[in-house]
Amino acid sequence: MTTGLQIGDVRIDGRVLMAPMTGITDLPFRVLASQLGASYVATEMVAAAELARARPDVVRRAAVGAGLPLTVIQLVGGDAEAMAEGARMAQKAGADIIDLNFGCPAKEVTGAACGSALMRTPDQAARIMEAVVQAVSRPVTVKMRLGWDDNSLNAADLARRAEVLGVAAVTVHGRTRKQFYTGIADWEAVAEVKQTVAIPVIVNGDIITAEQAREALERSGADALMLGRGVYGRPWLAAHLERALIDGTQLREPDREERLAIVIRHLRASADFYGLPLGLKMFRKHLGWYIEQAPWPADPTERRAAKARLCRLETPEEVEEALTALWLDVKHSRNFDVENKPQVVEAIA
Image (cartoon, rainbow, N blue to C red; front, side, top):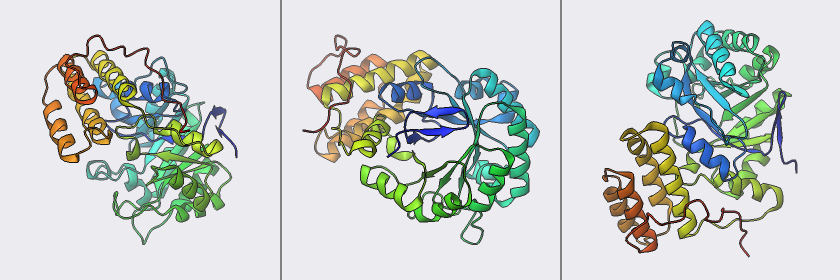
């Protein structure tokens, strides 16, 4: 089984990619996931027109930094000229790959004729792809859905046009826009796209376990897979699934001290990146997922109560102490050695 993916002139050292997710894949998360073994983590969705106007919060979403194996900046927009200018700025900022969002189902996005709404206007989608490909020298990719609804399943047709226009790869979420995230992702429907084009196809949707990863690749015939919501509270998941696909090794989940070190590292990075109090506010959703995903306390009711309590704390120091007490049953975390805890790479014996 191949262990990497070629997108244009960019070699990715793996076939398990992390999707761009608004409010999730900011720079602190991307650096952390990369340190834990992820080979590809895209930025949050970046509004191309606002990036071109240098709106501070949008520029921050496209932030690049040290510690990343590569930089993938995803752009969203409905105007070809604005998308081309955003792509030029993304390339200047250091993007290795520029991804176009034709798949976001959010009403505020589709209402502006962006995201998955572009699957209803394939000619405009084509104009955007052509403009962006011509504007930059970096590989351009597209993330889409199967179609707007069951009556307009046009992913294969759009992928064919993308390939002709010079797009280097496509990712297909196995749902329509009308489904949002309900129902079950249709991996077999992605196979039609794979059979239509020669460029790499990446399957996305409902992939959390190694078994699902193997099945998604087998049923879709895709060259790689992309993780979404499954990484919430588990930034090590891509590395775990990558190893499972390569040699079948099942990696153990982080123990108490390893998991605590990961969370504290993430918290401190968020505080440094955004400053306070915004850094803590941005981190709270991650904190909630970390607590929900951990097996301690064993009682889910206790975990929910702990989540509610810790997400109301007002300083990073209070969060560190409370989380250490929750997982290690000690009162103070200030002497906890975050940097020298072992990485989560050991296999289950």
